[in-house]
Length: 301
Image (cartoon, rainbow, N blue to C red; front, side, top):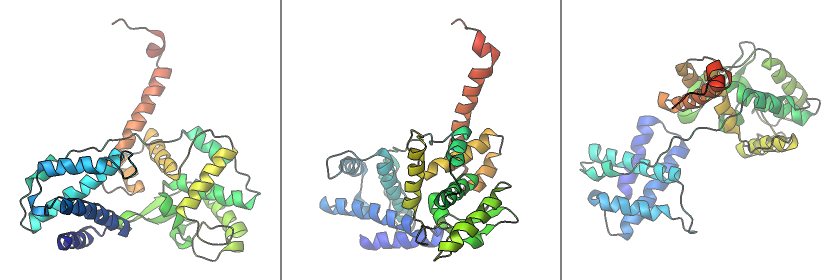
């Protein structure tokens, strides 16, 4: 059974150049599935619909007695689907039960901030304080370019083209994309580099700690929530919220969805389309608050 898993992992490496974390996630999911089958004395080739449904029940309850999230189960089932597509196509299997796997994935509307909230967050830094200068620069970059927190943490100065005003970002699957930033932000970047980074750095990474080392994703998350608490923002924030806000605000202001897809580094347009739901909700709010008939006429049913 291990040999089938190994061959599948090698296959996805060759086909998709997936990240190490993606490979590890597949491996964990498939090893867990293998262990379950072995406990039931079943091999991969003799899996049927009942086995799969029983497995879903099995993984629903975690070791501590709590219930696993639908998103977690959906990811595990997605790994199994991909695995069996490979086995059916390349290993001569004929397991049709894969088509009966339930789909639990929900399309959750991403959390985002309104423009006024983003401005409040960024404009309440005192850049005379060097740590706050770093943090304002860092979170402005996050919002200006719609970066993932891992992409922000891994930025190096040679990725930033100040005169041309764009950033070269290496995203998921080592895919490279170019993202512009707004005019004037380069001045803040230069100020941060001269006053903070050059005084402390021990690395090529752009955003560093007081000790001169690369800031981690967790450290960035901590600094973001700390500032929110300091200014009485009264909400839990996370770096991906700025990425969601970036996409939503671009669409709200008329950007083409395919352009937003490119800026976010999404391989599939369907991933970007979730933001159209956010923008449509916002359009409805504006309509309901501004349209004279919506405000003044009570329609009869």
